[in-house]
Amino acid sequence: MTERIVLAYSGGLDTSVAIGWIGEATGAEVIAVAVDVGQGGESLETIRQRALGCGAVEAYVADASDEFANEYCMPTLKANGLYQGHYPLVSAISRPVIVKHLVKAAREFGATTVAHGCTGKGNDQVRFEVGIQTLGPDLKCIAPVRDLALTRDKAIAFAEEKGLPIETTKKNPYSIDQNVWGRAVETGYLEDIWNGPTKDIYDYTATPEFPPAPDEVIISFEAGIPVAIDGVKVTPLQAIKELNRRAGAQGVGRIDVVEDRLVGIKSREIYEAPGAMALITAHKHLEDITVEREQARFKATVGQRWSELVYDGQWFSPLKRSLDAFIEDTQRYVTGDIRMTLHGGQAVVNGRRSDTSLYDFSLATYDTGDTFDQSMAKGFIELWGMSAKVASGRDIRVAGK
Ligand code: ARG
Image (spheres, protein in one colour):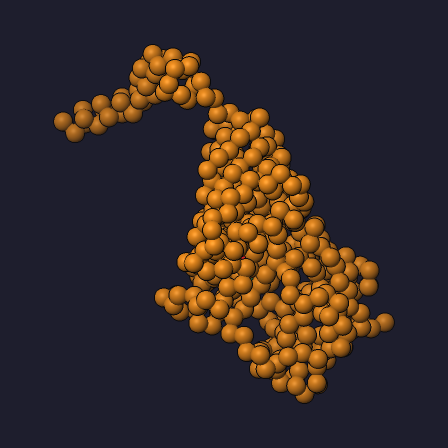
């Protein structure tokens, strides 16, 4: 029987050419799998037809947009997941859900190998292949761009020679990856890290310099998850989409960073994640009133480690799973409303309320009604400073010798 290879298919030039390229190099039949993670753009049926037109024996489309929002974006929100404090893990969290569907398709169509369009220099190859090793340890991996010398020039020549139903002339200088959680743009002009991004690279966000009137929004959370916007019930996917639209119109969530890739390269990336950044900001502020101080401090460390693991392709790893359990436990009381103003590139929180809040007016107030006994503070401070005071006494003694 002819060997079968499942290919992660985006509909773009590289993966379209990869169908025939893999076929010629290996003699295998190629099954194209496109996964909807809310990337928008062309309809999945158009993409499916293109795959067949490029020689795929089967083309399979998986609608994973709700699954992606529920099981990948929401855990990232609960973790306040920002790699290196900036990047909301847009591409990093989409790879594991794509892998899940690739492995499923490999089983359904009797494939022995999974293929993806990544280069040998980035993080995504690692995320795909570590994911596949974990979910389908018997499956092999192949990356035509990396393993079968499929360069851009060769891809264009191949597409023209075979008359593939794909545009080869439209020159996009950037490498773009997008889904409902955000959009990542790199390469080309941006590789000079002194160059500012030009306006044309943005798609999810309007320029914040000339914003429309401020937009006030109330986001309601239940156990760390957005459940309503301005009182209207929403699913996680709807919440992200609605905030992509409203925060995007105000230019919220533009990020320009040089980040540390797993493979040891520093790389420049422009992100836009209006919905994700608005949600993370709101969520963080709700945690500030509902999560106990020591738990909150420790959670910040856990969230950072969680983000590194996810960035580094360890979504399905035991440590990531254990940290999920910790994070989940912290979200028990993260229920309530956050009011924020979206304007001029900023999402600024200006009100919060929660039935599970730890904010105690009678402890905090400087007005009448104060129940805090200030006389307790004096002794507390004595003891709190004791250890450092003893040590500094020693320093003075030793220096005087
Ligand atoms: N640097 C980001 C990451 O590793 C995004 C990579 C996505 N690819 C792109 N073509 N911009 O997660």
